[in-house]
Image (tube, rainbow, N blue to C red; front, side, top):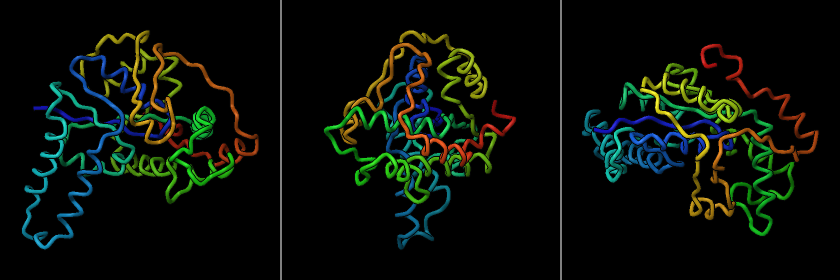
Length: 262
C-alpha cells in the first residue's frame, strides 16, 4: 500500500526543484500540482449538499477519499507519493485524519523575491497574455494582484500556510529556497530526518524537470523548468524601489521568527 506525503508552500520558492530532487529516489514519486486536492474537496461538497448527506457515515467518507488517492496514483508503482498543491496547508486536519503519519514540505521565500521572480517570467513571455494576472498592465497592478488577499496567487497560499502551521505545526517543514539552492545536501538530509526516511544520495549536478503542457496553459513558457545543476544564482531585481519597500515593510515572512523550523 502506498504512503502519501505532500508538497505545498509559496509559489516561485523551489517546490518544482524540490520535486525534481525527490523523484531521483527510486522509492519516491513527485511532480507539480495535481488534481487530487480539487477532487477531494469537490467530492466532500457534493456529499454534504446531497440528499444522502445524513446517510453517509464518516467511515464511508474516509473510504471515498482513500479511493480518490489510490485511483489517481494507481499507475504509479512507487511506495511513497508526494502530492503537490498550494492548498494542502489549509487542510491539515483532513490529511491528519486520512494519513496520521503524513508531513507537508513547504517551500518558502521572501515575498519581494517571489514577486520579482514572477515579473521576470512575465517579461520573458512578452507576446502572450499570462493567465495569472491577465487584466493587469503594469508591474504595480500585477504585484497588487498577486498579493490580493481575496484572490492573489501569492497571498492565498501564504494564508493557507500560516493557518496550517499554527494549527498543526508538527506536520509542516519550511524549506527556504536559498537554503535548498546553496546547501542542497544539508537541506535534503534535514527533510529526510523530518520524514523519518533513510537518506538517499542525490545527484545535485543532474536535476532536470519541465512541464511544457502545464506552462502553455498559463502562457508562461519555462514557468516550471528546472536547471540541471542545483546552485544559487539570484536574479537581478527588476521591481521599482517603491514596490520593494512596500512589500518588504509588510514582513510577511512569519516562518523566520519561528525556532522549531530552522
